[in-house]
Each structure stands twice: as structure tokens, then as C-alpha cells.
Image 1 (cartoon, rainbow, N blue to C red):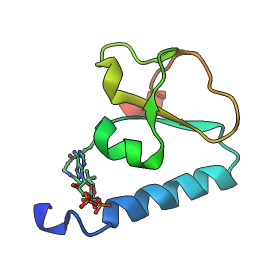
Image 2: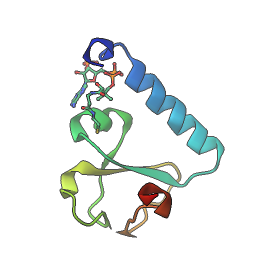
Image 3: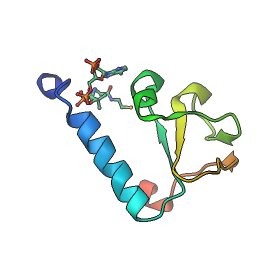
Image 4: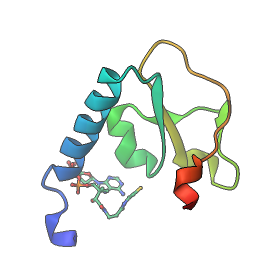
Length: 81
Ligand SMILES: CC(C)(COP(=O)(O)OP(=O)(O)OC[C@H]1O[C@@H](n2cnc3c(N)ncnc32)[C@H](O)[C@@H]1OP(=O)(O)O)[C@@H](O)C(=O)NCCC(=O)NCCS
């Protein structure tokens, strides 16, 4: 809701989600979103990591460990259920 925006809720949710992914040993995170916003958290477009059908500048990745993978990303089947 617009009246709830800009209070730090988005930042808190993202930081909590990233912390949980680190605890689980995730290698990194990808998302489709506004570069200007998610860049604050270190997300950026990686030319060698792609998602077909979306503007490349909005497909962002954040490595958690050292390596940045390369390749075509696809949605988990659960997204289509
Ligand atoms: C984008 C969104 C998730 C951020 O959540 P939030 O709780 O408002 O975020 P926070 O309070 O942690 O951060 C607010 C800051 O983000 C900035 N921001 C919000 N949306 C932004 C955007 N689309 N692009 C760039 N910056 C943005 C605000 O200007 C504010 O900046 P400031 O800290 O310099 O004042 C939320 O505003 C929202 O749902 N917006 C409408 C839907 C939308 O745009 N979703 C994007 C999904 S990819």
C-alpha cells in the first residue's frame, strides 16, 4: 500500500530474506526488479546470467559466495502451479 511505503519495510524484508538464504548456504540470488532500488542491496545485472523474455537491465543478481554463475535462468515449476 502506498501509505506503507518508504518506512523501511522493504529494506527489512530484503535483508531478512538475504540473511535466511545465507544461512541455508545459497550461492546467490536473482530477481526481476527495479535496478535503482535493488542496487542498494548490491544486486546488479550480470551479462552472462540471463532470463529470456525480460529486459536484461531488470534481471538482477547478487552473489552470496565468490563465484558469479553464467547461463540461462528458468523459473521453478512451482511458479506455474
Ligand atoms: C519498491 C518497494 C517494494 C520498496 O519497499 P519500501 O518498504 O517502500 O522500501 P524502503 O522503505 O525500505 O525503502 C524506501 C526507499 O526506496 C526508494 N524506492 C522505492 N521504490 C523505488 C523504485 N521503484 N526505484 C528506486 N527507488 C525506490 C524510495 O525512494 C526510498 O528511498 P529513500 O530511502 O532514499 O527515501 C515498495 O515501495 C513497493 O511495493 N512499491 C510499489 C510496487 C513496486 O514498485 N514494486 C517493485 C517490485 S520489483
